[in-house]
Amino acid sequence: MNKFIYTLLIPLVTIQNIAIAHCQVPCGIYDDALRIIQIKEDYKTIKKAMEQISQLSNKSDPISSNQLNRWVMTKEQHATNIQKTVSEYFLTQRVKADKSQKYIDQTTTLHQVLVAAMICKQTIDDSNVNHGVELVNTFVEYYFDDHGIEHLEKLGH
Image (spheres, rainbow, N blue to C red):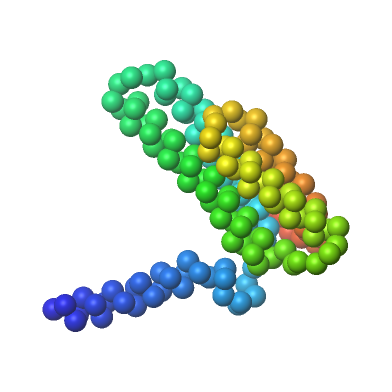
């Protein structure tokens, strides 16, 4: 019986690890614009969570306390998503290191996006979200050529 269970579980674990590591496999399948859209959606979710946290923090009933906790966890997770995408996708794989001003602008802006996401974890001030989105828009200008910006606009952002 144990062999049967292991036979089923090992392929599932392997598939899960491959799916998680997909962006670090040099397959050449990238859609940078979708990553930008996801970061912006994460920021929208953080903003919504901040609003809900502010509203629920004035209540003391168990359901409100439960929802407050869930919104805090959601805010944390989406800020972490931003940090992972910036670090593990853009900085590690997509931004190419060289001595150009473009590289300096891209890496500096991405670092600022990382810090903005961290500050979103620490606060409920939505001006930090707005600042993060502004930084992402600045990065878009440094990163994408006209074709990439057109693709991003077609996707609705």
